[in-house]
Amino acid sequence: MQIKSRVKAGVLYVLLCGELDEHSATYTRITLDEMFDRPDFQKIIIDLSELSFMDSTGIGVLIGRYNRMKDKDIPIYIANPSSHAERIFKMTGLYEIMPKIV
Image 1 (cartoon, one colour):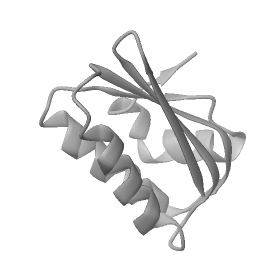
Image 2 (cartoon, one colour):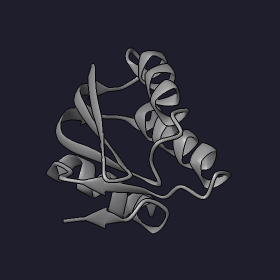
Image 3 (cartoon, one colour):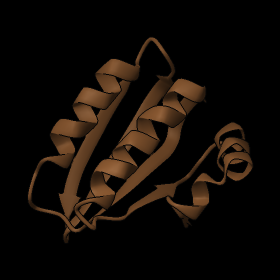
Image 4 (cartoon, helix red, strand yellow):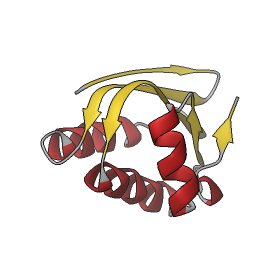
């Protein structure tokens, strides 16, 4: 798993690359928490265009980050999900808490 980020105009853009599963969950959780602790953004966009796989552990990582940012009133949006991720987000109702943006 590789995670890239940048802040532009008050938005934290995060690009997840690789597989988000039980093997990468701890690294992903720690890395995202460090990024999310920065005070220089008002919303987060997580780009899944380079995410090749995500399982239930990965869903848990994203829900945990959502809950953490919800307490700070910072919304999280999902961009460019693969067809696999799209199915997971629709099936689980995750788009209701982390809307998909174009």
